[in-house]
Length: 270
Ligand code: NAP
Image (tube, rainbow, N blue to C red; front, side, top):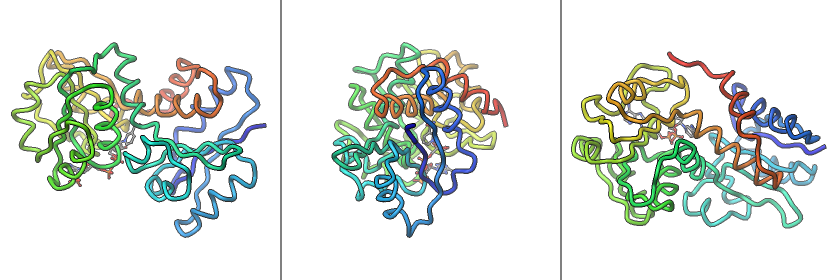
């Protein structure tokens, strides 16, 4: 049997185990997905121990995504983003990947959203913002990063090819001219707040909200009312998991099955 899992703290409410296990079951794979919650001081022992025990792969979540980078042999994209969310254990030792960036891109491609040559605004410069900015820029979009803390946006933009950065006030000019808007802040999580005023949204815009609790955020409701195309955060969550699944099993993931397993666990509104 192959054992996969999630390393984080806390991981008690993770949606990943049922999503991955539905995928294994659909493909008849003899595999299980379990959660691990080591203390911060035990992270290195946990990664080494997983390798020694023959665990096949681990996802990594808060607060370990940055620290794990130092403990594995990281793929170039994970190194550029500065975070690892997937480890594959093999003969060459633990290899680190970042599937959040490709998760953003695949979530949008699933909805037939074109990225090459498009103007994208990423709101937020934390972990999700970094992944979105690199993913979109690598897919050919021109990326503007707007963040509450301007220095953080500026630092990120310096690493992302062709990106610009400013504070949240830049949304007023940028969003009406944009093709794509990604909310990568936590605004709207468990609340009815929105990071972007509704009057800036328009029918030529695609809006991806990284927030998935609830799935239907106020931003997405405002976007739909403005005639924009909407992509919810569960799609991003799904595709970061699908990418990890495919990395580990070297098999196409059963996307519909995994999507259904994920969505049955998610609440739709606050
Ligand atoms: P993070 O690293 O802590 O970053 C939080 C971001 O939100 C920062 O840019 C922060 O701005 C901004 N922010 C927080 N409160 C704000 C406020 N009141 N007004 C304006 N900006 C505010 O968190 P993260 O890991 O990037 O996660 C952000 C969101 O994305 C969370 O809701 C998380 O659940 C979601 N997420 C979803 C997926 C997915 O697969 N769908 C994956 C990862 C994360 P400052 O820099 O100014 O503090």
